[in-house]
Length: 67
Image 1 (cartoon, rainbow, N blue to C red):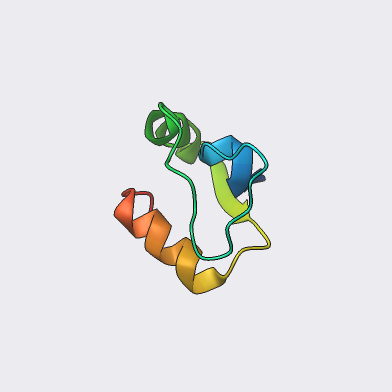
Image 2: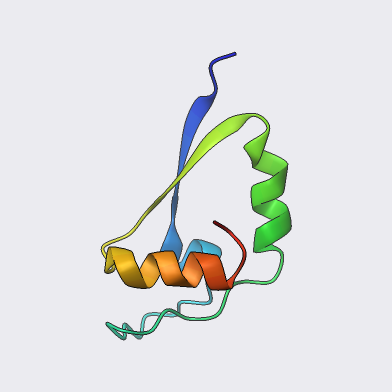
């Protein structure tokens, strides 16, 4: 079965971003994000888009068990 692609922004959608950009720091994960993503994974191919550094984002995803 071919899944539809769902693209999610990192800042403000998956984390607690409120407009204060810190280049080397990603805000904490939003409450409920893990369950939200789990509810989508069966029906969608999920992609996260962001202008942040890929290495920092990868580390944040692993630390928050979203990898």
